[in-house]
Length: 607
Image (cartoon, rainbow, N blue to C red; front, top):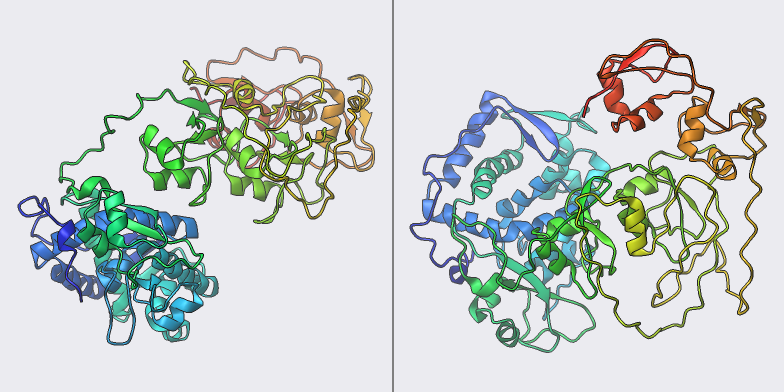
């Protein structure tokens, strides 16, 4: 096995903060999304491996330094592929994070993949390139292999073991109760491969969390086709020897000009070791501390024209991997100027109930506008992973649309004619960050030229979308060709005159959303007036009140922190009134369901 990168471990002597005493193996721990219980025999076997890993201090320090540098890149790929983060320790177990590692059985690289397996997973392996020796490419291939096996086994621990044994070889170790289990019990009969993995986690998790050893951060940059590693190192002001050590995947003298995109790993900022007392600092040229917006209660910054994900992440004081993860960005995705990007995890719901998709608007743009997770919007609206939203679609933002309620489309003005390659308009000045900590949805909509739903009559015109490079094609709906002469705005739908004394009878096919738009009220209000959940489907002939019910006589003065239920109240409307969640309100009152009775007193959470 190759020696640990000597050029990248400068200055490590005497800086170790690790103790020579091996950590004790606990009887229970969390691993790959499972709660593991180790009996005494299994615990002793793991402890023996832990002691072995900690026996030589210099070797342990070197591996921790490599792990500190490599884990951010590995973690990013694992998150993108949907694997538990603990699989980072599998690369340590397989190769000690050595890209040039080779086994006697022909397994190569960071994840010890055989040639046939690597090719089946989409890696390039030929006389010029061996992506098994490329950290992020091989990590993605290994993640896909594990994901594929877990789809069959439904247990991440067994999928981990199958990485060593193959899908067929893991069968003798599987128990009937393993599928979709949350807990597992390890004994002396458990595969040594799994016990060794536990040892890797026990040793390296606390060591990396403490930053007990100096290390050199790595970054990933595009590789220039036709150039040598030395030429690219000079262009990046990096140590050529360090660049060569980090990129053993390039077997040819120069990066092939084969039409494929490759990336290089380079030491960050001239390969100066980061001390154990390291604390992140902004470079001298960094922007001042930004003033964050608050969207859906989440910290966000607006992207500036030409700003890259790495630049915006740095401006917000976050790592690129974390920034891409919380904003659900692909590796090479370009930021949209003026759009909000978050520095905390987005939520699954927001204060709005519905949104009408504007021409040219994507699901990703809607998710960013409201601070809602993209996968949640797909789940609420029964959208496939690769399904694009179409103009006029009414998106449900906070609740699952019942399958009995058909997807609804509103009439929206067609977008302006777009050339295939429009000339870029002069850049507009970037709006300064808001002085206040909180930003309303209306203010954000004005900044970003996005539509927003407000109480009152339905808005009949939407802001003109920005030009894009090419028109989006929707296979299931023909694209509307805008006419040259401008047509007058469509006539608004007839409004229903609210009359509480005469309930309205629902027409066939009518939805809560459509009726609320006709009446000019929020769907949540209409649901509350009729004591319905916000996602309730309507049936033909159902009688609904179209205005607030008459005020009930005051039953009693409710003490502070309590609320007396009135006619038309629902848990949803009360939660909105007191700025809390329905779940919190139910828990605060020890309620198993959402049944309410007029006159009863509820305890409300105080802010």
